[in-house]
Image (cartoon, rainbow, N blue to C red; front, side, top):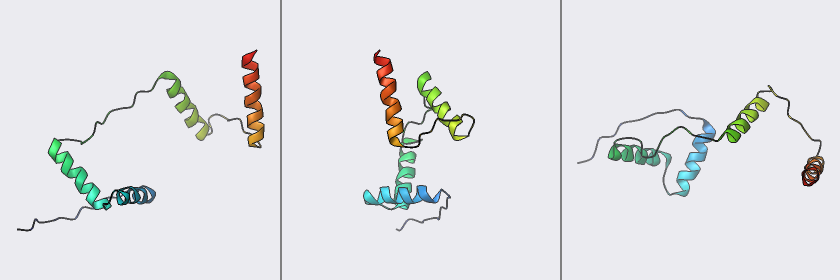
Length: 100
């Protein structure tokens, strides 16, 4: 006896969909097959088939993440360089200063 099927529609970013299709295609399955596998595994284990938890970062990482958000939102002006050579010259100078 054939199992009844039902349609399931969802929305996601088009680039995310394309990336997922490429990933699952490389694994030999379609995106709908991967979603079905996820749901089947969720039903089997009675919840999410992976651990879902809030990330915990150390203070230095959290500060760096906040700094990047501030730069991206123009709250903080980031230093810029006209060339990679200029950047490397400054990095070399900083390393020399630290050695002294």
